[in-house]
Image 1 (cartoon, rainbow, N blue to C red):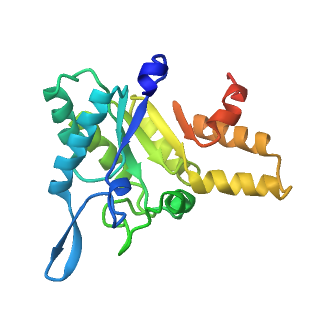
Image 2 (cartoon, one colour):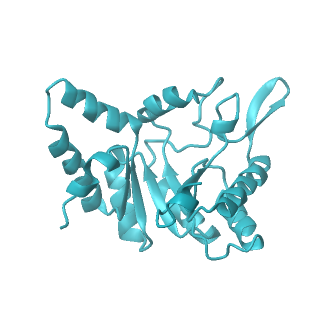
Length: 225
């Protein structure tokens, strides 16, 4: 519908399973010996099918956010086989198991019903893993990389910028957005000035693309330098 009414709009679609499951996890869950776990390979088949359906619906960029191992390669194979060889993939290559996702999860009611996402999202204390994850996704066919969240991981963002020349995105997530907005509402800071300062920090660290809930409010005010 969006592509029909706004053909000039760039549509980037998020590929994950958490929005379609009752358990809130980003992959297929199986029960083994009374214990539940994420089945990585089974998840790849479903994720790639979702990506194919998004491509057929008109997506301009496919952005897998699930953090299953090998999902970029599986999606690339699916897109190529379906005739979408030129459709780019923006991989959530470096996505940390962060406390800053809270407001988003509350809004979508997607908090995991058991366990957490630390078995597939990244350890915030491990910065070197980011390079390995990015290298793997590029080798599998990713065209762009993303770091999520943005502000707590500017050092990681900068490390990727130093290492890779592909377009690099920074995701200012719901917790970062909410913290700034609530602080502004409390009169603690000037919202517009603070938002533009965070955007400047992300760009300075190496981001080419900013993903943020503030986009509609302040995109026109982004400094040109």
